[in-house]
Every structure is written in structure tokens, then in C-alpha cells.
Image (cartoon, rainbow, N blue to C red; front, side, top):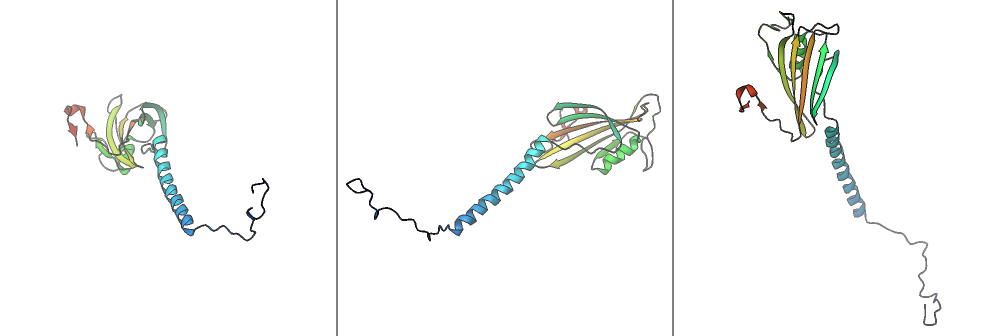
Length: 184
């Protein structure tokens, strides 16, 4: 505008039909780098969040029936299963899946041995424990296996406990029979 309040066409910017907007290739490279870093971090964060929301279950043999499930705390679960499989087969399954098993004397001697109950009540056969890592975390599972039950859907029952350690490190197992000392 000039002093008279009139628009001066000479001072008005003229649209240029041939004016191109050029962006620096450095801007595109930087943007692509930020997107790639965000994608990598996002995928890792998704895996961690998924693991927190859905922690994995311990190994479980085929053809088992869940009798009971108690959620003691977040990441601490206690299941009771029954199966028609022999108790020694269940113990061998857990050994094959990375577990260490302590067998009761005169039970499961040899690779084809079967568990026998010498009384009319249930009898302890094995106690198996194992540890596994997932994402940034780890968990310990324990299977307490017994035989001698008189049910149409199975003679073997086992109690399976899983405890997730959100720090990622599995602490030594506390053995109450040994007092309050840690058992390695």
C-alpha cells in the first residue's frame, strides 16, 4: 500500500508459476534415519510389553487335563493337571525340556520303567525344576509329579508352578528344609 491507501501493484508479490520448492536431501536422510530408529525401538518395546502382558507358560505335555489354576500374584501361577500318561513319562518330558528332576528311589529306574504305587494312596514320583528366559525377563517352573490316583481320566497328577522374575535374573531357590540359607 502507498500513503493514499491504495494498493501499489509494483510492491505486490507476483506469483511465479515456475518457482519450485526444493528441499534438501539431508532433510530426507535425517527423516528416514529417525523413522528407522523409531521402528527399531518400537519393535523392541512391543516385544517387552507383550511379554509383560502375556508371560509364557512352562512346558506342558500333551493330553493333560487342567484341574485347577490359582493366580497367586502377577507372574506367579499354580496349576494342577491330571493325565493318563505314566508319571515317569511326565518326568522324562520335563527332563527333555531342560528340567532337572529328582526321582524318588525305586521309581522310574531305566528308560522304560513305569511308576508304581505300592499303596492305595498317591505316591510322589519326581520333582522337576527348570528355568527359561524370555524377552528381558526369566522364569522358574517346578513340577511335582505323583501317581496312584484312581480317576477315569488319569492316574498321574502333577502340580506345576511358574514364577516370573521381572528383573531378568533368577535368584537361587530358597530351600526351607535347610533353614534360611540359599541353596545353589
